[in-house]
Length: 116
Image (cartoon, rainbow, N blue to C red; front, side):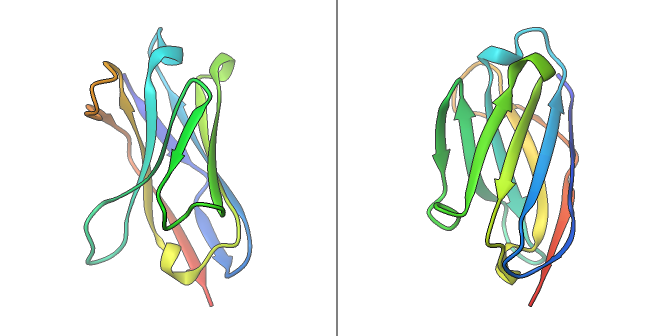
């Protein structure tokens, strides 16, 4: 399973951005897909996950971020609204293919920078 995230960039506070993650794998529809982020000097943080149409978001982004997936395109999206400078981080997607709670596959990240 290979994952490739894209869509990062530099935006101003209050703006929106959509990240994409293209996933290889014949049974993509059965994976739990997660988004994580890591800010400079901080530990990796769970952002949210999606399984079929069930979405879970971290409290720090709830109400501003959401996740969707397009099974036909093998793509999962992270929709980020009302961005804040503290959202600045490298974002990456990960796959829990066995639905075990362990994200065994992780792609390279994409940098999101939010200026005030």
